[in-house]
Length: 444
Image (cartoon, rainbow, N blue to C red; front, side):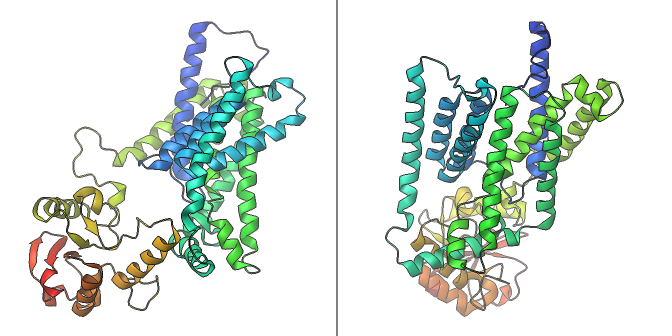
């Protein structure tokens, strides 16, 4: 994040004061960003608290936004291209927003908004752009091949599974929680009001244009979704591209940067409340400290034991960790398991295969169709993805035996409170307070 000076016409502060101001800006903006990321997303995007390809891509996108604010458009393209290479949708939408912000700046009255300030000789800008485009292409081309060999009917079925059944909370606006939408819209309004309280600078104007380009992408997604009754298949095929993902991160970022800029500007503080600036700043800092204290309750700080990671939020944490450790130490390396529907960390904790996982859904057409078949076979009593059971064992011994035979499952991990567990005709190999491991090999 780039500290944006409050007033370009003011006298330059001493280097020591400038360093302290920059440090204060970064700390306040970082704290606001962390809290806003939890409170203001509309479509459930997350950035902090996990690690996967998109997190690394977000690092590149945030670096690209910093380059945009500095007016280094060419190096911004390079950063967005690297993000696209790591995650085609995270970086790709960042690239689209960068182009939109650049086009909006073409009519600017301030020539500093339009010029490229990328470091090095002029030819290096072309090199940065070429590198960005090359990296983006390397990310886009493999993604285009995910559905190339599938029939039109299979593609349509896979898209419906992906958008309507598996990820509607990220992709389908009509399923978004109303409080989340309201908080997101409120964050946009507050951001816009905060930008009016501080002196506009070239860096601020660039960041505002980038944020407006991001909001235009989100708005386009909403408008597309409104046409679902008229052309459902076409609309769903468009909505699978995560139109709201970029807004879920950039709106909190813009809100945090503007909030920090206001906090560090004495005149802006006085415009908020007729009090000395230190009072407003103290209130902001106390609010941040309180918010971070609440958020830190799940952090693995020194002296804390028994904390359960969010990946295990849908299982009984300590018993699940214990049962996975037993599986890792006492079962064959090539064994295959039937796991509870809420399990998300089984393969990571055990290095063993599982028949299917709700969390680990594939991206390609054939994989999605097979994934749905396995989910239905393992957890559904009526052939739909609603009101599914937590465990295959809840569907009875015959269903458990048939699924094990069909998919080559050797063992099953079953919650101890599943009805009918005691009547299952399979040996129990290990048990704790939350789960049992049963042996299915003789039943196949």
